[in-house]
Length: 289
Image (cartoon, rainbow, N blue to C red; front, top):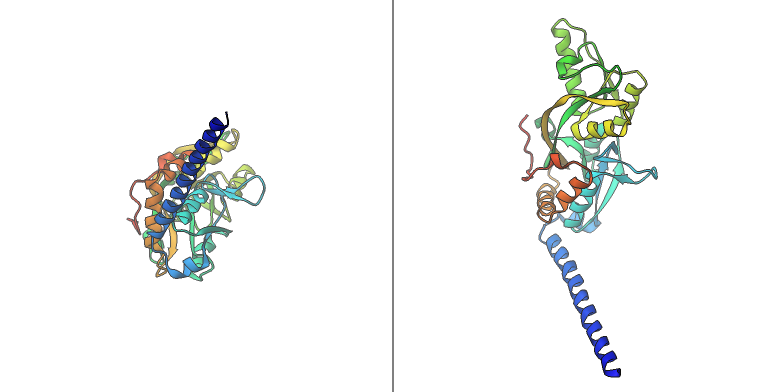
């Protein structure tokens, strides 16, 4: 009996040793992956990257039910990218239209707050693409106007988040409506998408505009109050926003590729129901317009 017990302990020790070796191997592999991506010394020394978010844009970035924790697709990806770079991710809330100025003044290191990449934005920032989305219209489910294109906005009131592509599109459309002899667009600017949706819910606006995954999420969570109108237009890549000459663009690109290669990227998109926005080839500054 004693011999059997001793053999059992020996077998258990071998099993535990094997598990320990596997765990150590996985840790070393993770560390090696991070070590192969050359991060500028400044960020290595501080041990973290500060990401700016306008966390009112579910499912991409928003506040959890505890009223303080940021969650969402972009948050999960930011954590995964920081891990590949061998540092921690720190998240800071900011107004969307203040994020780029904040990056320019070194208040933040980078941002992943659903920024559509454009040539105009590339003039002042570098971008690494990681997702794609278009713009959608959504209206009240009962009595809301039928909007299928920007041209249908003439004579309507539209709520948008300040500083977004949608704010630019609606403003430009206002000018085009007037130039065509039609009523202009009453463009209302709000600090975040929650405020824009509230404006429509309370009757101050007739139409809301947002990135397609965000609009779809809002409609789904509205419990029948809102509905999508028309189909998304102008699909374009989202980009991680990085200050020029920071030395971060190439390391972040490599980290995104690594997150895609190990399957974490697909897992995160599936978690948030956003698989339709997946891309296969991330790039630095890929804007075409």
